[in-house]
Image 1 (cartoon, rainbow over the protein chains, first blue to last red):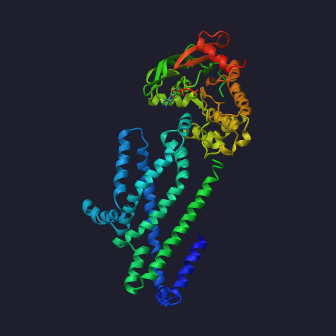
Image 2 (cartoon, chains in turn orange, yellow; image 1 turned 120 degrees about the vertical axis):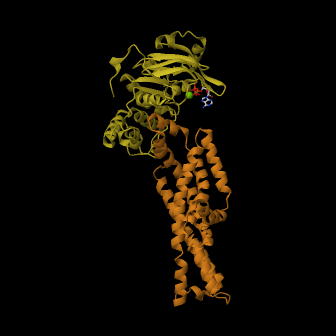
Amino acid sequence: MIRILLAGSLCLLIAGCSSDWGWYVVNPATKKGMTNLQFLLSGFYFTVLLSVTAIVISVVLGLLVALPGLSSRKGLRRFNRVYVELVRAVPILVMILWVYYGLPQLLGITITVFWAGVIALALSDSAFEAEIFRAGIQSIDKGQYEASHTVALSYTDTMRFIILPQAIRRILPALGNQLVYMLKMSSLVSVIGMQELTRKANELVVTEYRPLEIYTVLLLEYLVLILIVSAGVRWLERRLQTDQRNR
Amino acid sequence: MVQQSDLKATDSPIIQMRSVSKFFGTFQALNEVSIDIGLGERVVVCGPSGSGKSTLIRCINQLEKHDSGTISIDGTAIDGSKASLNTVHANVGMVFQQFNLFPHLTVLENLTLGPVRAGRLSKTEANDIAIRYLERVRIPEQADKYPAQLSGGQQQRVAIARSLCMEPNIMLFDEPTSALDPEMINEVLDVMVELAESGMTMICVTHEMGFARRVADKMVFMDHGKIVEMSDKEKFFKAPDSERCREFLQQILPH
Ligand SMILES: Nc1ncnc2c1ncn2[C@@H]1O[C@H](COP(=O)(O)OP(=O)(O)OP(=O)(O)O)[C@@H](O)[C@H]1O
Ligand SMILES: [Mg+2]
């Protein structure tokens, strides 16, 4: 992975030697370039904060929507289906615009750009989280529920101590995927003015007229962020798996 | 464990089933089954595959809900109500063919989770009791391992200890040795014999007739969802009433 990254940067550097490139715009050796670079990098703060807040909410929401989907009661299962189908059908960009411009009017409240972004991303993602949880929980053998019953565990305790810990280990790769997806989708929140990575790049392009270099930096910023996240998820997977040995 | 042998043969049975029927869709898995089981009694249930043996014992602890008839444990009707759930939780332990240990928990955690969450014991008390039962099933040294690190026989003994930690009055066994390699069957049967001798009320679905001959007070033979033969072991093995039972025994007993 690191090697691909290095090779990629090398290609860009070589290409940068041709007359079409103007790396000066983000050259940390010059004062101007340094300022620009810092401006671009400062977008990490909101990209990460927004994505992490949204993923936490969407995981909780997803679980709350998944559980009724596993119920033996038809009404609860229908709630799950309707939620998933409706929410999944809304494009993320549309969800962002609707939450930011529509929701305040509907509810008569004001909403900050940050929270509009968080709500829109979390809602959109929750439908997918719900499906992931449902599949993960359904993959647990029914003997685990039966054994829990024989040691007098309540439904909540069975879920909390027996089913979810095993389900989460199984769906960890899928949850990691969703986090990566969330980090990328957070770029869409730039359209309502969130000062995250993409917005910063857009603003700099407007003043510097160097889209190639600036968007290349932007691309690398996402790449680095996501490689770090992937490595983190893999580390977590390995750590949790050692608990279960050859299962 | 409470010594229950001297309480044996009390008048009112601890488990009473009256005309219990169970359907899976249109298929009738139990057909008007009635049986009384006294405190401390050891019942061995056998019969061909699909005859309803598992369904019978699973109705007792509400893993299956029966459709008609009545079941009572210690005088409480088993009908899916909160009271019946409490009665099942307080009285009935179960051991499965597939062990069903919790794979993400250590052996010790498998044993202590139930008693601690039920609010019966503190963590340290539960640990002490767990170790005691692990000693009884002769694997105290495996306490900190995970189930997948144990042999099948050891896993099944952990499963037995896990049930015993709940201090049940009744233990249900559903073919506890059927998933084991032959050389591990005896280590599990030994533990079960010991348990039987301690006076535990037991209902065992098993085809281990050597075990049945040793411990059974009552033998039950099922076919097509019905109890076809129910008698003490002498009569059962020497002169069963039903032809079907005779045939079955001939098939599974060594000649
Ligand atoms: N959940 C279920 N849904 C539908 N049919 C079932 C279900 N559980 C059991 N049955 C059917 O009920 C009948 C009795 O099943 P049961 O498991 O009680 O038999 P058994 O005597 O324990 O057989 P085995 O020796 O194979 O374990 C079988 O024909 C089985 O197919
Ligand atoms: Mg069975």
